[in-house]
Structure formats: structure tokens, C-alpha cells
Length: 176
Image (cartoon, rainbow, N blue to C red):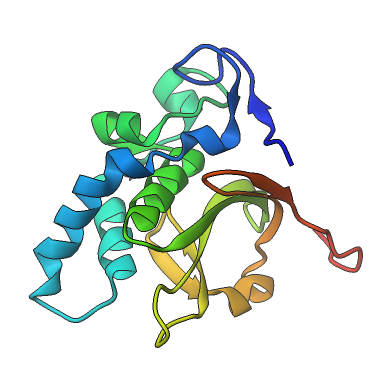
């Protein structure tokens, strides 16, 4: 399916931008390698833990209203690195781009959560020893098993991949 487009004025390019163009995998590869290499000798955590911890430690959550005076304004990952502050969509695309640069298959999800409409990251482990699926609450740096999504109350409407988008099939029995 063709990805929905963010309208002009809702991003720094000032033109319509398909959601999936907010991934910047190639641009984030050097940073992703630096993050993982910095910590890999100190402990044996998987790369995704280093990346999610780094993002949480270096990017502060700030609403678009506070930062830009707008209800919603999406930044690209390189812009998030410049401002060092962003809301859920920018932090999620930065996290997903860094994870993709390390070989993880990701999706930035938009949907309902207990605290309103939100963006988060879902990804799959990269090797045979870890093929589990995970959810990253990028604004807090926490990583959960995707099996916990119902308990957490994360119900995606759309999955955004680097090259496409997919609408979720909503379960009509869910209350949100």
C-alpha cells in the first residue's frame, strides 16, 4: 500500500512527505555503529539495548506544542539529533532508524495506548537465538516483549516500514 502523507507545514521539508520517508537508516549507520561499539566490550547486552538506552539518555521528550508551538510537527532523525528533543514520532523514527542500521527489522507504529494516540517501535531480534518480537516505548527507553502488547494497551492502526506501510486489522472486541 502507498503510505499516507504528512501534509505540508507538518514537517521541516514543507511539502507532503510519505510517512516511511522519516526513516534515515543510511544516515544513522555511523552513529548506530558508534553506540554499539562503545558498549559492546563492557557488557554482552544485545545491540538493541545499547541503542534504546542511548536514545533515552540523549534525547529528551518534548511536545511539539512546547517545542514548535504546533499541535503536530514531525522531525527527521537527523533533526532530532540536532534539537536533542522531540515527541513520540521523532524519537520513534530515530530509534527505528538506528535499529535498522544494525540489522533489526522494524516498524514505527501509530495507534492507541492508555495515554492516547501515540507512536512506538516494534522490531524483531536479528539472530536465531533471539527471534522474539519487541515493543520499544522510545519515550521511556523501555523494551517489552510484543506478547505484552495487550497487557500494555498498545493497539496499532498503522505499521510504517522503511519501504512501505500497512494498516492493522483492528480487533472489534477490543475496547479503546
